[in-house]
Length: 244
Image (cartoon, rainbow, N blue to C red; front, side, top):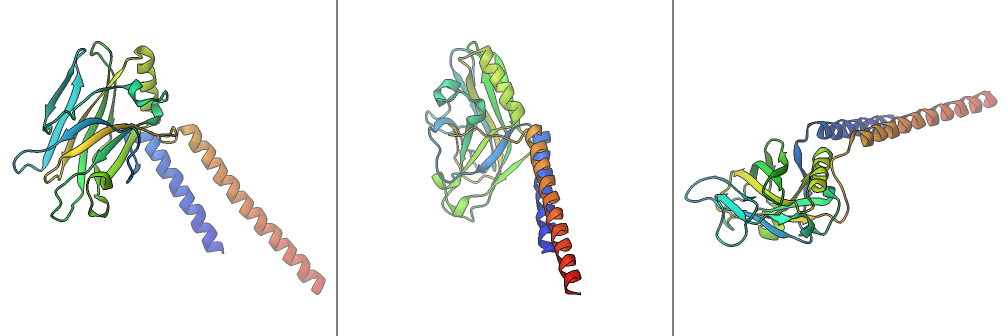
């Protein structure tokens, strides 16, 4: 029992440290979770597809104040779009989500791909950049069950700091538009599809206050365990004394 308790407390401490590290070092765009099911509403953002034998894809879509401008390894079709934040039907920037569909060829070994960088940009009505958030370091994403399309979605969102920056940008311009740029590697056919979406519940990387509360709760748990042990030892001592 002692070993189990110690392992539990150690695991809790590791979780706290890991969450705290994410809150400190996240650079805006973070991986929220794998997501097999599509979220609603998914709005087309960006399709990337390399040409020839390349194993990298890079491209994006921007807003110049009057129209969308796309560039790079984009696929054919009307898939490259900036959107008004208001089109997501949410008020809270913490609910903003970006979906990625890994859509590699059916054959092969279904190797993971890597997002080398992903940047969300918020444009004012006149095309002025009012907000940016970028992923921190490479994100390697597996293909679930060796599937493709809807079976390969991952969800990305904003950390707490980026959420507040986006909130300020929306206060400055209620007609803020969102654009997306990405660089991928280890691809072998594509296209990779990015879509805008929104979470039903607000959520982001825990803020420092949350970490303090969680740490306090764990400390209380450890104290409760010690008190129970002490009470059990005293009860046993009383029993032994009465028996003697």
